[in-house]
Image (tube, rainbow, N blue to C red; front, side, top):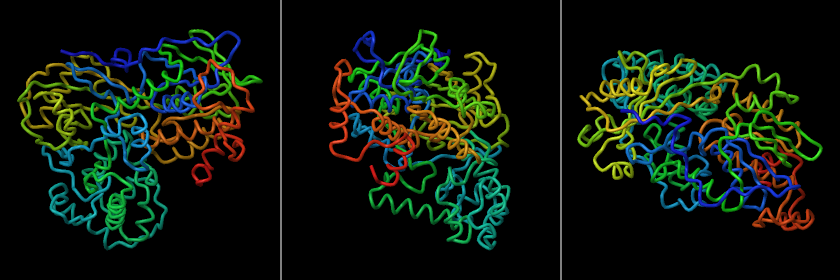
Length: 543
């Protein structure tokens, strides 16, 4: 019944038709990228496109990281990330560069539901991470009952005693709106989205601007209204996607055919510019040399002028833990395990979208082990068309420190549990699936919890203490493509400022450094002193 799509067995991304081209003897790589997720591939794409000799080393047998694809019953599906946040526009800009502009799509605006105990209700429309802007709205009362809604409304009457000082989301919501609002609205949504304990989620990270709006509005619900109004104004200005801004989670977009098409295109473009992308190569150690970096792998040693580490935090610290500045951080590294089970159901299994685009499950839902269900064929019109009457649902297991309920189960048992949960969540006697797939993701510690920003900074500072060493990815940028992509592009810019090459020149051609510098800068300012300097200049608008 199960087509296993675990980390070792997932269908890899297309790797193009170019053969692997070894570096000529006696030469070195301009940049070695360790890790071929979205961040690593973005750096490789940007550098190779500028004529840099790039080697990418990936331990698994696939490219794309959490933005890779799997084939289930002949459907090309996302194995991990299925959407990206629209904020900043960096992902859409990259997609356009890759020729995917016409394939950027918005999800079904029907919105998500909540599973509360033994009943399901729509997630309140005017809300932010489940926090309602109107506590006495009908959909809030449906979720909380009159008592819970009135307690949440008391937020409007309470003075703001901690101006801009709330760090954790859970305590803030509990104090302002009560436990019921936290447990029934915020914990299922925020905890499910970020795979972290809502008590530890950093307000500034998961809800930027909320603390300032709280000071301005004088209440938490009023602050949510301010943030939602600002987002609606951004849509009106054309600064954000017009995707039904008041629908929770709707400030996202996807790609027709799946988000994995972005990383597939990055890999294809990088190869077209002669980057060497190798899978099944595990890096065991890295050390600085007088001329750059030496990288040890289970397939031999490599030398490069710069080193880009694009790994989850535990793996990054395994590789770099012996270097100055990293050893103290390595002792603190913890990880989160998430498992996704996808079911492809026969035609007629589900009529319409009875639970919108999916369901977030509260902790008190009896007998349901999944933390969330995505009705993918209802959420994405392109998938509904491709599925030809079949239904695709994806269930998520594991959150925070808790092990997934699928832990220890074989693939058939995991699929059976997912089907049982899907029946309970959707309220349908679903038939056996046509096919199923299971993917396990070993992630670093949550990047959205209180203290994570300080840890990100500590990791960056440790890297910046070593010339031509750069960290990219969720370990330093935060969760999601909207965070990872612009950070990776800034990192590539920093490397280019450190060591120039002629844009578009194949790496097989030798280029005089002075000529490369002249072509790259074209009379611009001299190179920044470090990757951090490049990031700072870019953020100031100097670059």
